[in-house]
Image (cartoon, rainbow, N blue to C red; front, side):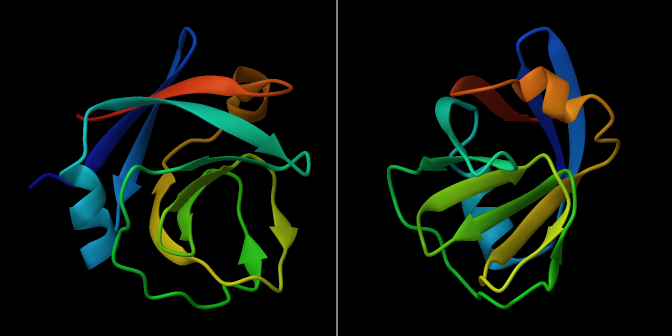
Amino acid sequence: MQNKLKIVVGAKTFSATLLDNATATALKKMLPMTLEMIELNGNEKYVRLPSNLPANASNPGTIHTGDLMLYGSSTLVLFYESFSTAYTYTKIGRIDDASGLAAALGVGNVKVSFELE
């Protein structure tokens, strides 16, 4: 399976590279999908997935703009700001060029589409 993901937010499209791990593989099997992502903390959008994904959480120390991660076993998180964290996540992938991501995601909840490129 390919490791490139297309993430569409409104009129803006981002390309992401998925990691080669069980979590990314399981996520790819769920695609394509459009999700209503919920705003949290002014730095991320998240959504509960309809089923659990394999998790192998660790503390990344620093979250980077464009990181796509799994919190717990069923919460998909897209980060649009960089910051230090004490939480643990399973890494799924990262947007290749996150320029304009925060502006595209905007304030509040937003519909985001995920599909393989």
